[in-house]
Image (tube, rainbow, N blue to C red; front, side, top):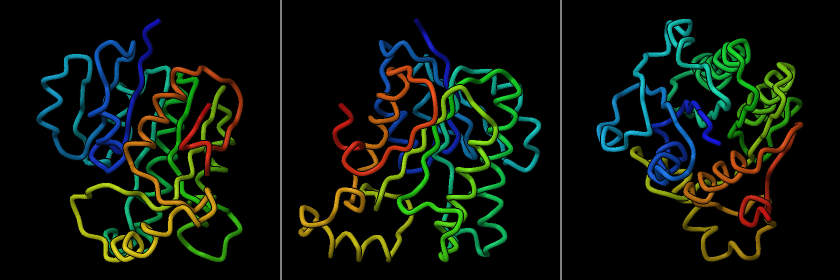
Length: 216
């Protein structure tokens, strides 16, 4: 049975891998909500897209009628420019879109969060991720998947010094690191999202560590 899914964060590292890995025999119609047009999507008739600046979120509502909402949406404090702007992009926007999707009948939510996400964390980044997880859980989707990857591998459009240094250090030693903190390629996370869509589970789930590498 064909499913319809909406993706926010389509131009990010995980979102772009997810779209690139889709095939028209996946029984999945996907609609990407993007901040800028993705040209190559026009070649895939089963993927639609809408371009928004995310300032008027209510304008997004008409395209949120779907079975599943996938959020790979996010930024860094450096790119955001301030903690307040980071909260708006990483917390407020995904939460508001999730609320609208739930109101429009969406039953499944898949959120890409972060390793260490905890609303009580002393670290700002992981605290915000934890607060978003809890706020979306309170919306009571029939199915809510939280994915908590560690350091993401893959070629980003922008250079992140911290990630680069971590990859240099962690890469050769990855097998010695606990599964929860092992670097993971964005393509692996994207494949895991497809796995969750096809699995058709019900309830609330947190996925991290070895399960992201070997779901079965």
